[in-house]
Each structure stands twice: as C-alpha cells, then as structure tokens.
Amino acid sequence: MFDNDGAGNPGDVQVRDELTSNLGLIFAQGDLAFPGGIFVTAGASVNFLKYDFKRVEPTPVTEQTRRFDVVFSPRLALMKKFSNSFSVFTSYSNGFSPPSLAEVRPSTNTFSNTLKAERGNNVELGARGALLNNRLSYDVVVYDFSLRNTIVVQRNQEGADYFINAGKTSQRGFETYLGYDVVNDQGFLSLFKIWASYAYQHYRFKEYAPLDTDYSGKKLTGVAPTTFSSGIDILLQKRVSANMTINYVDHIPLNDANTAFADSYVLLGLRAGYTLPFGTSSRVQLYAGIDNALDEVYSLGNDLNAFGGRYYNAAMPRNYYAGLTVGLGAGR
Image (cartoon, rainbow, N blue to C red; front, side, top):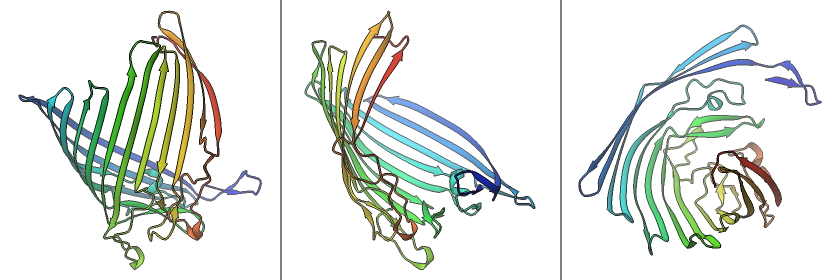
C-alpha cells in the first residue's frame, strides 16, 4: 500500500506484504442406483489450509503463520424417482469455508491470525417434475442451514474494512421455480416460454454479541428476505431472439443492529438478438439490450456496517448495450 500524492499517483510505501495460501483437498464421491428408482450419492472431503504472512516493509521484516485444523466434510444425498416427470430428493452436507485472503489481510493493513473458518450443516428437501406433457416444469426446495463462526464485515472510522466471526447464524428458507413452454417446436415461433422463481430467506444471527451488544435474533446483514425473478423468452425461426426479465429485491439490512435498510427495488431488462449461421458449423450473433429500463434508483454493492452511515453505492441508471459474437464450430 502506498501514500497518495494528491494527484492520484502512488507515493511512498506504507506497507508491503506477502501473503501465501497453501491449500490441500482430498475428495471422493460414489453414486449408487437401487431398484425402485432410488439413487444415492455419498461423498466426503478432507481439507488442509495454511496461510503464510510476511511484512516486508517497513523493516524489520516480520512473519506469521496461520495453520487451520484439518477438516472432514461429508455429504449424503438421496433421490426417489417416481416417474420420468416426478422425483423427490433430500440431502445432508457439512461444509467448511475458510476466510479468504482479503479477509485475513483486509484494508486495515493488519493480518488476522485469529479469524476462524466457517463451519456449517445443511439439510435440504425438495421435489422437481413436469406436467402437461412436460410443458410445465417446476422445482421446489426447502432448506435449513446452520452456520457457526460466520464471517461478517465491519468498518472503522476511516472506512477501512475488517472481518470478525459472528458466533452462529440460522439460515432457513425455500426456493421455487416454475417454467411453462407455451410454444416449443420447429415452426416460425420456435419458442415462447414464461418462467418465474422466488426465494424466501429467513436468515438470523444467533449467539452474536460483539462489544457486549447482543444482536441475536436480528436479520443477517446484507441478505434480502425475499427475491423474485420472472421472464419471457421468445425465439423466431431459431434466428431472432427476444428476452424480458424482471427482478425484485426486498429491503436489505445494512447493519447488524437492523437500524438501517436499503430500499427494495425492481429491475427490468430487455434484450434482442439475431443469429446468422455461416459455413457448416459457425455462426455470428448480433444483440442489443437495455438494463434497468425503468431507470430505478437503487444501491448495489452496499458497504455493510459502514461507519457514519456510508452504506450506499449508486448503481447504474438506465443503460444500453450492443455486441457481436462469432462462434467457430458452434453449430447451427
């Protein structure tokens, strides 16, 4: 990191660090099929991780090493296929997510050798299938994910970020998808599809009391309680395409105390394209579109727990794009 000379150019060196990550992973998985349409997948991984940190400047040179415990992570999944158009499934997995390099060496110019890896258990139950001669497809999943040593971001008075472990979090929810092929054939109107997806996320802090302030039961910072997406896909003669998407994001808690929230917003996107085959297996595609067609004012990439309420980062207003892609050997 350098001083800023006031003109946007680097000045004298403040600190110069070298950070090395040494990661090892052993993974194995097996799939079994039983009579009656029952399928079982079992797997496990063993994880090894070590960080080596060296501060080269200012002198004297200092070094630190953080070696994480060896972690065994199993996974088991079971699916029952009742027919070609309906199946149910369930799974259990135990996860391990170590802090990233940016988290152990944040913008506060310090090396965090006490930050713990996140550990979690996830249970899922779901169903997927199709109706109306496979024209209507659906997918539903409910899950319960418990996470301990959750890593969350904090910011100091200078706006520099640092990371801490937040005790435990409970992350429960469900996700659904529904798609309907109004048309899907070889005629002039090759494809006309309507689809929608919805997610509900009941994410809460548990046993989280930094600086003797208990935030247990508060909504998990940076996570929208609900999101919804929907769209229409159209294809004419397998050459001309048109797409419309709508995305809704619910209000987002911006600090651990849940006293500040980003407003909900709706984004509309439109895109059209034309594909021109040439040769036996190549094609050129022209496309153009509009993002944020409703010119929504919203914040994207919020700075969570920012000092002084500096949470927001303005997102792009209505904007346009166009492009061309060439695929060689891409087929028709």
